[in-house]
Image (tube, rainbow, N blue to C red; front, side, top):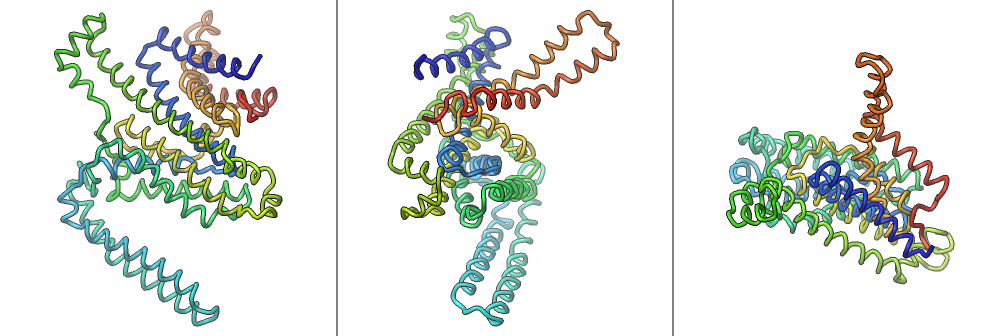
Amino acid sequence: MTDVLKNTLLFAAVGTLILLTGLMQSWNSALLILNMGLISAIMALGVNLQWGFAGLFNVGVMGFVALGGLGVVLTSVDPVGEAWAAGGIRVIIGLLAGAGTIVGAALVYQNLPAGRSRNLLLILVLLGGFFLYRAIFDPGVAAVETVNPAGTGFLGGLGLPVLLAWPIGGLLAAGAAWLIGKTALGLRSDYLAIATLGIAEIVIAVMKNEDWLARGVKNVVGLPRPVPYEIDLQQSASFVSRAEGLGIDPVTASTLYVKLGYAALFATVLLIIFLMAQAALKSPWGRMMRAIRDNEVAAEAMGKDVTRRHLHIFVLGSAVCGIAGAMMTTLDGQLTPGTYQPLRYTFLVWVMVIVGGSGNNLGAVLGGFLIWFLWVQVEPIGLWLMEMITIGMAEDNGLRQHLIDSAAHMRLLTMGVILLVVLRFSPRGLIPEK
């Protein structure tokens, strides 16, 4: 069997599973799986850039995804005028004072000779800057968060079209990745994993607790959408007549139309990122990155700046994850920092890359669709299976109740079994790297 035929059959199998979901459950469920599969494939491409191309073990994927979601709020939400008037300018000045403190400390450290004088001046700059920052920043935050805290209580965004938020979310994640990479990429792979996981937890903790930024755990709801609202479609006489002409209920037709619109947008972004990743993989730059991945010492001996190249690929992969995070927040219509669980969902994305085929962009896309489908469908399938197994038992049978209650744990069990089976029989993934 040729590689092209094998890959076609694998994607056809996943497509068939989604079609069967539409036929046996509902087309709304099938399209939701499709949309989240497209987003998951983009996340998997971002991780594949870092791990498959360069061997960077990033366990902080959810931190960059969360920053992409934050980018949607900062870009597309209208600014809250009362909050800006109450303390917005003071918050900005406080942040600039904090940044100036860090820059001043860095200049002192770099320009003064090592010794007691430099240490004392460094301590004075840091302490003085810290107290100045808090003196300006804290009153501004308190003033902002008291402005209608039930509805706003934050500064809002720029009020730009939501589609612009997707690349801006990627840029926000890329900027954070650059700062992280400058300090963490010198670490060995296992220490890099610990560092990125810790930084992801810090990012999400800041988003949960800084209400002035994006309302924290109060969540920002009602985010702008790049597709029409269902209620507007249902009130459109032309749309209702077209739906009735097709024999579809207008309410159902409106939800399908919206989900298909999202699918078209997400598929376009996935195709663009995939083509760019493929071009990078086949370029001299891609060959250099794989050479660094396979033998850093040899690559460095040939004159390659390994740390700098690692920084490049770390920023690029994080930017892709940020774009995916912005798309996911747009699809949800709300930013909910409490749902970002770094270890749990980072594990899921890594399973996508490993099962699909690390180092192969097509494999990462396949893994994204397949693993997301299983993640969603395994629990209801497990519940149906347990009900079939216990169909002859009494309703109050203890074993029956235990088995039915255990269906909720089928997700993680199935992910582990799939990972073990793939690593045993196809250790390089379903579509391995050439």
